[in-house]
Amino acid sequence: MSGHGPGPGVHTYSVEVEAATGFDADEIADFIDGVLADPRSWRASGTVSFGRTDSEVPPGGFRIIVASPSTVDRLCAPLRTNGYFSCRNGDRVVLNAERWTNAVENWDTSLVAYRQYLVNHEVGHAIGMGHQDCPGIGQLAPVMMQQSKTIGECAPNSWPFPNPA
Image (cartoon, rainbow, N blue to C red; front, side):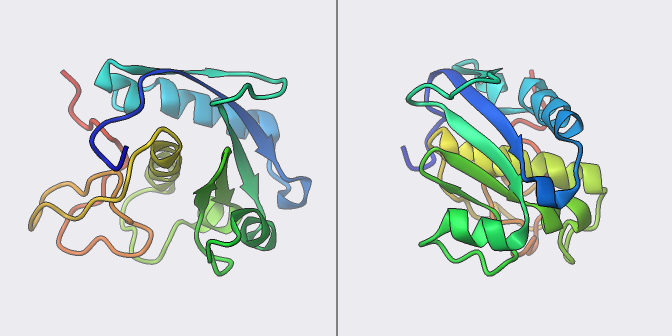
């Protein structure tokens, strides 16, 4: 699936937070749960849902890991995250703790909105979604646009379905 629609079914995930980040793992897990349960998230497609587990993730599931930049680089290899980007690599959705704390320079809305984007974008990869381009001047950026690199002529957007029915 290269961007046509999210893979159907229930997607099981776990949330892990690298101790070196100093983040509260329960707070981050609650935030991620809220993003994935939001009616604007991937579940709005009507074909996917999410369930978190605190035990081993079953085949087909994924691990969401918030980690320091150096750990992100290691977990994302051979992808080059350069201590800056996040990634999806195999069954891992790896979120860069620096981006979690500071967003990116070109992001001109709230840090909470950036975190929502980060979760939705990388989870989008885990369920089979590919990158998308800006559809036009002033339009909302697709959540699968690489908004951490540039917003371009689009407006920042955190959600796959920003205006659910």
